[in-house]
Amino acid sequence: MTCTGTTTYMGEMTSPNDCAGLIALGANVSLEDCQAMPLFAYAQFDIGGNLAWRRYVVTTDDGYELSLVHIWGDENGNFSPDINGPMLFLHGFFTDGLAWFDINDPDDIGLTSQMWVASYDVWIAFKRGTYYSQGHTDPSNYDADATGDPTAYCNYWDFTYDQIGLYDIPAFLSAIMEIRRDSGEGLYCDKVNIVTHTTGAAELMVTLNEYPTEAAAWFIESIVNLSPCLIPTIESVLAMIGQTSPDRRRILNVTIDADSDFEEDEDSEDERESRSLKREGNSKRRSLSGSGSGSPNKISKQALYNTLKYIRSLLTYE
Image (cartoon, rainbow, N blue to C red):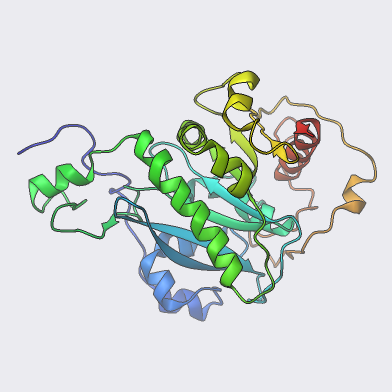
C-alpha cells in the first residue's frame, strides 16, 4: 500500500542533543523535557529569554499524542502567577511551535515570551504530525515513520485541518484548563485567549463551528488571527458563538503589517502590570518595554502587544 502527499512533516530538522550541557549553562527545563524537545529547549534558552517551561503530552479523542509547552516561570526558574489569564499559541501550516521564535530584531525575545512578560499564562501547541507530536496510542496501526508499516503510515497521515479543529484544539483547551485547575498554584479556570497564525485560523474556525456553545461559554475568552488564511465576516463569526455567551463574547480577526498605526491611551503603559526580563550582556533577552534596535518602519513586539490590546478593546461585545 502506498500513499501520496506529505511523507514527513518538519522531519528534515536535526535536533541538538547536548541537553546536560544546556542545563549546566542554566536552562530552566528538566533533562527529560529537554531531551524530548531539544530544538525547542535551545530556542527557548537563546531567543525565548530562558523562561522556565515544561512539556505535557496531550492525547486527542482519536488517539494522537501531542506536545503542549507551558511557560511557567521567569529566567531564574521562579513561578510567577499570571494576571491576564491563559494564552494558547496555534502555529500554521508546515511549521510548528518553533515558528513563534521567528524575530526580526536580534535583541528581541520571541512573541510567546513577550506575552509571558505581559502577564499571560503562555501555552504553545504542537499539532499532529509536527516534529514533536508524532505519537499515537495505537502505534501498530498509526505510525508516523515512513520506514515502518506502510498501512500504519498512511493511516497516521490521513488527516486534514478538519481533524486538527475537531480533535487537537479541543484537547489543548481541555488540557490547559485541567492543568491550571489542578496545579495547586491558586489558578482559576479562566477562559483561554488564543493566537493563531495562517491555517491555525481555519482550524480554529472548525472548532468553533463544531462546538459553538462549549467554545464560547466554557473555553475561549478571545481570538487573535495573525495573517489568517480565511477572513470570515463578523456575521458568520457571531453566528458561530455570538448567541451563546452574551456577557463575554469577543472575536478578533486581525492581520498585522509593518505600516499599521494604532493609538493607545497615554496612561495604558503605566496601568499594565508586567513581569521583567533583564538584558544580560549580549544575549537576546530584553524587557517588554525595551526599545530594540529595529528600523522605524518595522513593527516591534511592543507595538504588536499594543495593537492587540487596542483592537481587543474595540471588539468587545456586551
